[in-house]
Image 1 (cartoon, rainbow over the protein chains, first blue to last red):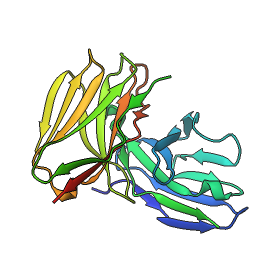
Image 2 (image 1 turned 90 degrees about the vertical axis):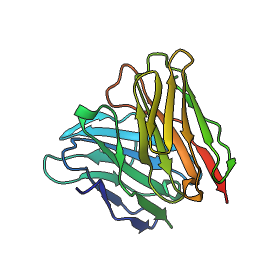
Image 3 (image 1 turned 90 degrees about the horizontal axis):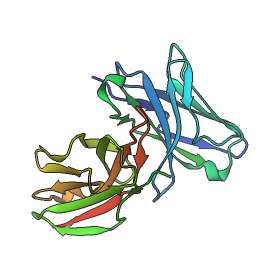
Image 4 (image 1 turned 120 degrees about the horizontal axis):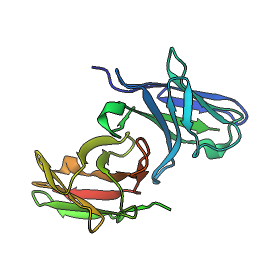
Length: 114
Length: 112
């Protein structure tokens, strides 16, 4: 019974490069959430997606960040032209709409921008 | 602006004692309440969910909800050093079937 999977676990990018973070939700879950967490800070909601739909992207920066959850395959969080301030842990969570708002988290991707 | 408030701590508790973690929320209509545990450098892990007033027990953990006072707490009995972590409170507002409002977390330290 695989949980939420994220890859890569660690990602190093130089300023100006692109970062692609992947998330496969728990089996049977159709809702995906992306969060960002800076060191010693709380979780910040970024975006909520269902298959092929972005439902709420109110926490996403307007520029350089995008997310998708295609019909087939994992959800992708894409950061273009990364800057040092993008260095953080990015967590994906998934939920089953039949189980209320219980969200289950993946191990996270730690992005370091040099 | 919906808010969830937690004391940041650190809260230091001797091993074997009861650790009491508290959380208040501003949205009176909130329906669902969750406690997550996050070890340093790891992802949040759901440990308790509670939906109705009163107590809910699961092993050494008890969640307590008081909607009239807009207060939810987590008690950890027989605290162990392995319970040392940051505990995050999350609340689902009444009008949303997906959104969670997160507290900043309370850092708990269990001293042997």
